[in-house]
Amino acid sequence: MGFSEVLPGTKKSIGLFAALLAVAAAGASFASGPGSAAKPAADPLFDTVLALDTAAFEAFNTCDQPGQLLKHAGYFAPDVEFYHDTGGVTWSRQEMLANTGKYVCGHFRRELVPGTLQVYPIKDFGAIEQGTHRFCQFDSGKCEGIADFLIVWNNNNGKWQITRVLSYGHRENK
Image (tube, rainbow, N blue to C red; front, side, top):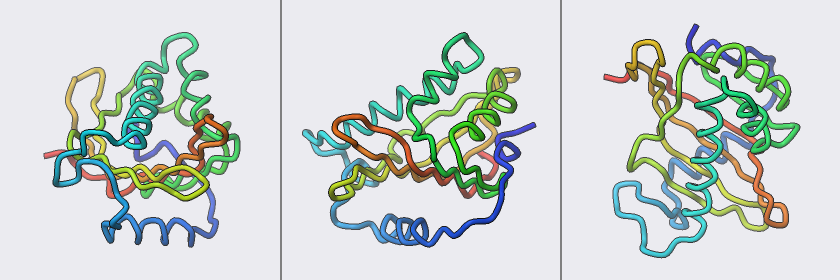
């Protein structure tokens, strides 16, 4: 079973996310990160979000090891919404982690595609992280799946948590 089958769900309005995607797709002038250009030498928000992404997905990639799924859980708000184009929607951290434990742990890992990460600030809230990731099977070592993603991070007095995730455009990695 692949990542595309991980997140069954129900229907709920996603107007906010359509707006976020429109802003991200438009290449807003406040974007930071490499995109098609090199990352600026000093970009603290980009560096923070990259470090958060790295830590969250190190735990995801090793979630079959003791304590790692719980560590991964700590990066998500309890009421996280996860939108997956082929798997559906989950409405809570508990539901999302149950699916991760069942379908991901021990089966595949997620890798950020180099040069695709962009970070956009959200005034008085946090940041939007946008990029492309691929999925590599543990049994074969092949990285056959790829998709785009958008993650909304909330910074609440220095505690960063993921509040929304969109993983979309799943396709074969050629």
